[in-house]
Structures are given as structure tokens and as C-alpha cells.
Amino acid sequence: MAAALGGVSEGQLVHWRRQPNPVLVPEYGSRPRVSYSFRDLLAIRTVARIRTQLSLQKIRKAIQNIRNLDNFEHLSNYKLVAKGNTIVWIQSEDQMVDVLRQPGQQIIATMQDILGEFVGWTGETVVPLETPKPGIRINAGVLRGYPVIDNTRVPYDTVASLAADGLDATSIRYFYPSVTDIGVEGAVALDRYVSEYPRRAA
Image 1 (cartoon, one colour):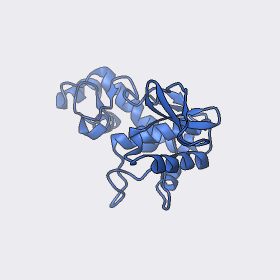
Image 2 (spheres, rainbow, N blue to C red):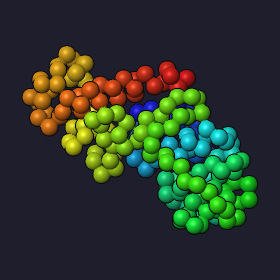
Image 3 (spheres, rainbow, N blue to C red):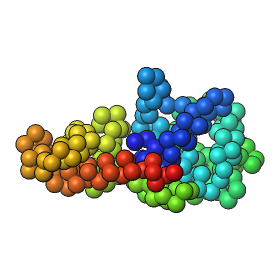
Image 4 (cartoon, rainbow, N blue to C red):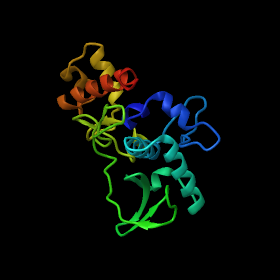
């Protein structure tokens, strides 16, 4: 799911967390299984968006430069965008710093929206993070950012599995009265997107 919502492949996520100099280590750890947080997803999408213009090697270098320039926190705390052949760290509306070609130099840049839909470097369209499908919502404050049916705390995959078992929206509402028809359709669509994503990303 982290790969599908982040716009990268599972293999890339494995590669990104390798030592030394990892791009992103999962906030919740990798044992007994890898578990990414909502903040991790923001960081993954940031890297995926920049990767449409620049190489991973340059992204790694930029992240290392940020570590050298700042008391480094989680990668999602840094608003990073590609500008030409460099990467800039947007600190505020009028303060932006080059972190690749001339680390520390103030420059002018435009913010890119990593929450919205974008086309990744493989040509695959990456779904919006907050509403990946109609009727589905991702909010850091609800189930730690796990996709749920909009206006509920019902995980999307619970509804998708009921639909896969042959239950229609009316039957699903018997178990979860707050789940709408659009929520059921969105859960099925997101489940299909996530399950088919590794094939498409490859």
C-alpha cells in the first residue's frame, strides 16, 4: 500500500531504506514487517515527485546535505521540490535554500503539491493522497493514516473484502451503517489499484 499510495515500487522502498545513507527508514520499523507512517507517505511522495525530474543519486545527496545543514528530523518535515537541475528546501514563503548544487544558498522556487495527483517518473499516475478514490479518505488523525471510508473509521480493505465475498452495498450497510454506496465503490477501486500497482509500476 505504501508503494501504491507513494508512487514508487516495493523494490524501490527496500532500496531506499538500505544502509548506509538511507533515503527513508520506516518510522514504525521493519520487523516483524515493514510499517510506514502517514509522515513516511508524505516523504515517499516527495521523493517520487522529485524523482520525475532528477536521479535518486541527486536526491540522496540533497538529503545528506540537509542533514549537514540542519538538525535533521523526519524527511516529511522538509518541503523539497525540484527546480531545474537542483533541489530546494522551502523553509517559508520567502525563504528557500538550495540543498543540492550550492547547499545553503538562498533561491526562489515554486511549491509543488505532493498531496495531489501527479504522474510519476514511470509514467504511472499516482492517486491523490488524502482522497485516493471517491468515498475514501486518508487522514493522519484517523487510524494513523490508514485509508478508511469517508466520514467513518471503517478500513477500506474491510469493505473491499466484503464486496469481494459478494455482498452489495445494502448488505454491507447491515454491518457498517455509515458506509455509503460511493464508499463501497471507492473501497473496491482502491483495493484494485493497490493490488494491481506492483505490476503497473514494474
